[in-house]
Length: 245
Ligand SMILES: Cc1cc2nc3c(=O)[nH]c(=O)nc-3n(C[C@H](O)[C@H](O)[C@H](O)COP(=O)(O)OP(=O)(O)OC[C@H]3O[C@@H](n4cnc5c(N)ncnc54)[C@H](O)[C@@H]3O)c2cc1C
Image (tube, rainbow, N blue to C red; front, side):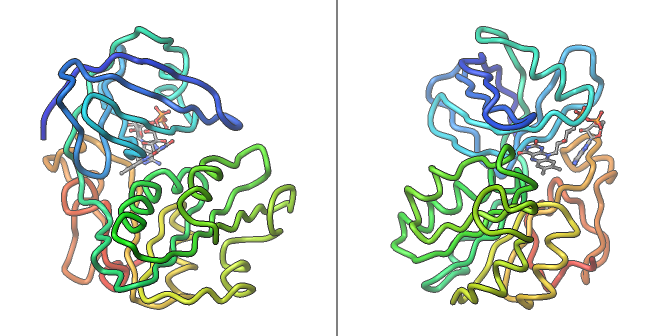
């Protein structure tokens, strides 16, 4: 874990209530590791956890949705504003669990943490199918980025305004993609349905409400077959067969 000051390079709306935040680290050699960062915002006691979408030395890209006061305040910040981030948090998806072909299933901004995984799988020469579900066409993010890595990327919207109409589970039924391991991130209800459909050979990234985000307060504990586990430090990625939904 490490705190680092960043400067906002870009904070731009890219979909309905969704922003792409590009940050430059004060230390140009610093690359944030882990699955997510915890962002401090002026006037808010608790930091806000946001998944890492891209990280490289000196640069970080996040996608966030405005859902409450904290993310609303974040959306009001412009280029040049400074942010303090707690970095190196959480365990990431394990690309090595896939032998040769992965299935990635995202819901909404659950697509963001799946993107670095997709890059890792592609770099390792592994095949993948990607299914990304959204409410409507205005919500779709990261489609071009995934397609550049994986031509077999399917968009699904609940109202049919982009891609297939329905839920990600409908797309899985219709397409029956081959895979030896799957990865999922999105709303809990979606991941629960996906794991019921696909079985236990997968990993899911949970998004429990967090307090400290650093393992001290246990606010984000979730139920697993090994007992309660902290989403922030023991997760947020867990093997699906360990999660007691
Ligand atoms: C590991 C992890 C990764 C996440 N990645 C992303 C991401 O990439 N993009 C994105 O848009 N959102 C992500 N979230 C959800 C994001 O943290 C919340 O939407 C955000 O904190 C809401 O803050 P707010 O002040 O706008 O809302 P409020 O409802 O006012 O927040 C009040 C408090 O609840 C916490 N909180 C609220 N909703 C959530 C939630 N769903 N999960 C966890 N804590 C929450 C906040 O941190 C804050 O402490 C992630 C959550 C977790 C746990």
